[in-house]
Image (cartoon, rainbow, N blue to C red; front, top):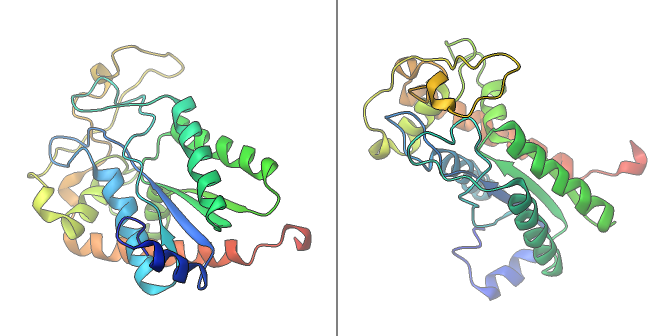
Length: 242
């Protein structure tokens, strides 16, 4: 049940079937010269919507902005602060709880470490504030990398590489503009740099040339399945019994 598409009557009816909701997070961020700036958001929404077709679960409208550090100097990247991301998360979860929801999956298509840590921090604060909610936080890309490890050919593949290009070729082929070149960033160890693009000019972390729509379809199906298992675990989670 996509909150963007249902009426208030359908929302009320949905509460009789589930008290769970997925909050998809993405970014407006460069993904090489071949993938759209909305890649992270599109992937998180795609798997959320697919799972909602298989079982009762609400899917909130996506947050299209994330905390982007390594790509901050690349054209098109629009970043927000961790404080903004945490505040948005807290406000949205509180409002959804007021509407009767109790199980929350913070699903982020953007895999930045600082971005994900902000989501975890917000989730921890909410758990302390409300004793009647359950929260999971997961990086959608991490699910793809783990579940698709038998499919992906590029060691260390990550941002805009084989995995993401394959998935976009499957789900949004009309948005893929050719193929990016194989690349890995060369940031200096331990040193913080201002001009990050100097050490990562093309904005690709992996090998887009190894991508295919068939790989993308397989990886997406695996991610949807993993997300379903996580949701089931969360809905049945009883911390006192663990």
